[in-house]
Length: 166
Image (cartoon, rainbow, N blue to C red; front, side):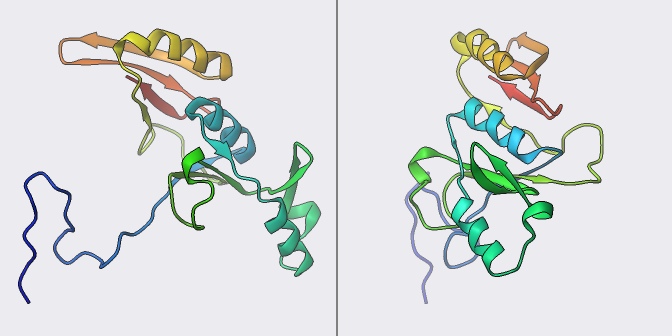
């Protein structure tokens, strides 16, 4: 079998990679998944997933306890330990696909610097307005960098996770 010829600058599969793309999601460990999902959905223009019907099915099957495993958010049931947000264009796509961020409660979160962070790319001319909008949502500004070759504002979400606006 011959190796396919890929045009210059095209994305191509890694040697030895899977036959089809593997769908991923970013997972954020946190204390309050519902509050983090609400903040980040508003910050990114994403939608908080409505798991009410799934939660009801899990409860009806006896796999979860209403008091221990669920919370009510805006009159809808959600899992206490985690919730996700999804890009609006991906909401109707197959489960497990699309741009998704999952927030999960983790009791033993380690303190210190994030091991990964989000960059919100808005452009130099929109940074101040975006920082103001995110601050109104509950973020805090940590510091600004504006030098040749680099500009961004480092912020913290309501639980202290760092992210950049650039």
